[in-house]
Image (cartoon, rainbow, N blue to C red):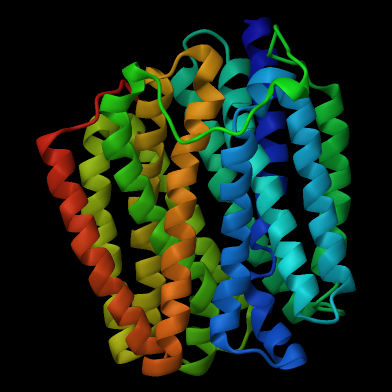
Length: 397
């Protein structure tokens, strides 16, 4: 019993470190309007700056997604925290667009190192029989951290001094504390190999994972695409179309989507991983419909509801996908397979964002958002149909 308690304590500590890292990746979200005023760039450039982060994640997942399987979880987490700290320094020093690009790229590198390694770390530290709970702890830490970033930055930017500096100074302090925690944790990789043995990996999967990976990847792509567009352009829509200039409110609306994702992940334990994937797609469809109504009729209530419902659907699909993939993965390749799933997800979080930014210059922000919703509706319905015909099979309970 004491051993189980100690295991869960270590799981919780890794989850807290995971949340700190991921909070840094969304910290600039409610601040982009201030950067636009300071540097004079367009909404397209906002989406490009946002997407640079995703390209950093994708690069790490391709080049070193399996690094923690070789060198250990702790060294990779420490490296990720180092990139996160460097990102915060870039934003503190920012006097032009180059600094913003560098900060977002470094933030992406930190998230790329963390996604597979921290998720596998939490699951490995769990006591026997705790795999499902550990999966929830890992994904909740991921989404909870993503939600805390805009909420913290929005509150500090609105109600404290130095709105473009204080959020990043606070995050630097949190990263320093997280590094101390990592140094105190136990390593779970027993047979470690030198870093020189890590090679760039093409997206590939062990044979036993392939049957569940397809539907899991489709669902993850849809959910992350919705989050990507919502996170990058919703503060601008709130300000331009709804007259909401309070940065704390903008940060809260974005945070609600991520916090609702945690609720969706928690529900997977009741409905099962296999059923959660098509159900999550249906809920994502409802979230898209609500967002379309909010854009079309300029209604804040519908935008808030779309954040809650869309986040719930994303949580259902995300934990269901992760459970299915993790259950099917060999232990010595789990982090690499999870990294491949995140690779698909981050393609979803980056490419549609840039598409919306390009359309915004020609159609306006609202019309660009509606075009995105139409495309995503087709995709989510196709994904749901596929999942109903070929459901993913995983315990997830």
